[in-house]
Length: 194
Image (cartoon, rainbow, N blue to C red; front, side, top):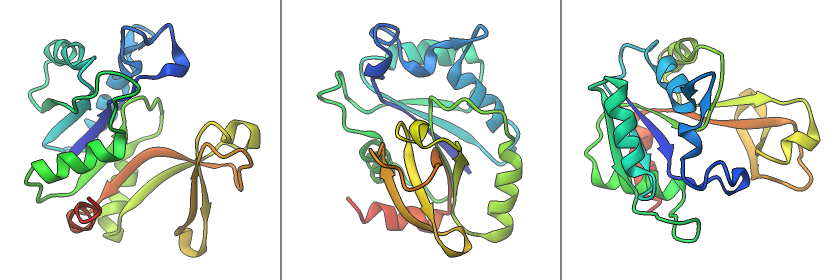
């Protein structure tokens, strides 16, 4: 299994903190946010490579971060974006990655700016047992806060019925954690969206 971490955003809402630094490299308790995700990925021994997709502006910062991380499993890719106006977006960056790389294994896909405490191992075990794609959600229990996230409406058997990014009037308080366990067969279907 490979892990793909999307780190190509410019985090304009956090300016001036993110004018010269990726949000993912901002520190919490002396540690870059992305390191917390990397630590959780270590719980899954089947992950043989971690690919971080950065924009062009912060690419060299991620290269330096990798050198200090001491993990040979990490690879940094550049999506080419150098400003908020020229960014290609997370989904397009992932599609481009899938079309350039020959991937024949499952993938864990996540946003690089996640900060969470739960174990990924339990979710991964469910992914293996069910042999189904898994999207990770969180009930924020606050409609006002939900406006800041991708909001999900679930149907029978927890199948995603609706998804709306940063809605003015959220239909639920269940929000996307931007984390997905995807089967290799699903990746072939995603590639067809290009």
